Image (cartoon, rainbow, N blue to C red; front, top):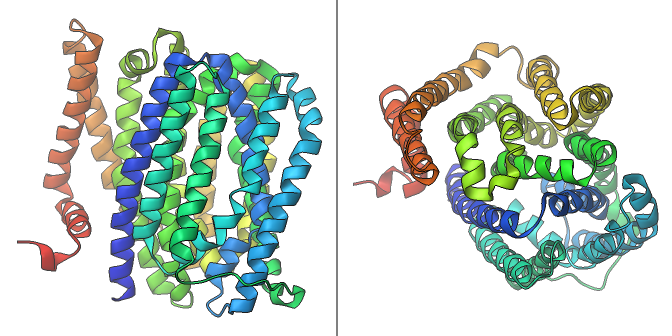
Amino acid sequence: MSIKQKAISSVKWNGISIGGVTSFQFVTLAVLSRLLSPADFGLMGMVMIIIGFSQIFSDMGISKAIIYRQDATKDELSSLYWLNIGAGIITFFLVCIACPFITDFYNEPRLSNMIYLSSLIFLVTPFGQQFQILMQKELKFDKLAKVRIISSFVKSVSSIVLAILGVGVFSIIWGQLVGAIIEVLLLSFFGWKNWRPRLHFSIPDLRGYLSFGIYQMGERVINYFNSNLDYLIIGAMLGAKALGYYTLAYNLILRPIQLINSLITKVAFPVFSRVQEDTRKLKNGYLKILQLLSTVNFPVMAGLAVVAPVAVPVIFGEKWLPSIILVQVLTIVGLLRSIGSPIGSILLARGRADLGFKWNLALMILQVPGLYFGAKLGGILGVAVAYAILMVIYTLFSYFILIRKMFGPCVREYVGTMWPLLWISGVMGLVLLGINNFVNDISPRASLVIQVASGIVIYGILMNFIKKDIVQEIKEMVLGGKNRQR
């Protein structure tokens, strides 16, 4: 099977995985929003910032280095495996030591037990991490899709059942731990058949990996800080309840975008690494991914911006009404972030983790004062608006600083890839606004169903008339190639 065929198969399996995982996450969010309070969501948002940040250090940036290096030996992989486990243990103790300082920062004593329990995940995930990376490197995304779907299902069911039993916000933490254990067991089951770590550890085996990993870890630290600065500022300045409203909006808009983008870039990075010296192939691959992401994400963001006033109270309940305007503003952030992440795979494939580090460092210098003054002047809505404005600025500058540096002048190709999909999604959104005026008198649930169904039909018709080539490519991807079409 050629690289292109493997990539198409991987994207197809990732699509299946995305559909399953996103569905489970949405159902879990909808159910828990009825069982838990906005303050509970805010507390969990605070905990997940800490856990997510710490997971960067437990990985040490080595996972990307394994994919980038095409000549890893069994001894090197064994040394890296035990290094990951050691890093996970150290991270566990560091989070526990930092717990009192974190609770003081947020002025939330309730966080203490939540952080201690959540930190157990660092003792679990390293045991399956390298199996996942090796399967990703070999483009075995069919197995990875099965692992993610099963573990996500278990996590969702566990969280919902425990919440129904009255465990409260701890139901989310226990669900994540149970899901992580299942994921590690499945990764080990699949990975053990192809590679088994030996009782071998040597510092010389780490050379080359650590130097790459340090820049990658530095970039991820700053990128994570930039991506979660809104959570930090809202939690510290406005409290758990305000963060809860923001967390619901963020999870509804940006979590699916992150999931879709990360799964697609997981395919892109190993593929790009194999052709890292061919600029033309890299550019064509990048533009194709950009087009695919825009095809999926643009209409979703446009649709959510229109249906949010009906969708939020119908799905999550009346107590979440303050989240409506946040959802609408964050659709701008989601749309722009969806087209920004693929360049990261190009930078890593070309061994330019240093450039990604410098870029994210520059963003942080702008983002800290921007979001701080947004919270100071406008509360949670001010943070969302400031975030949207900053994303517009980042998108404009990313072409000149990153994209042009990698591929040379290509603004017409870059904009031309996304523009048709942007205006088609805009037309769909405007038509939905018109439909909304005619369905105001019926029940909110029926109105929501009509609007969502209308949006899907309208976008599908426009795409078939205006961008039929993209529709055809997606059909071929789903069906496994032209040879399977009738």
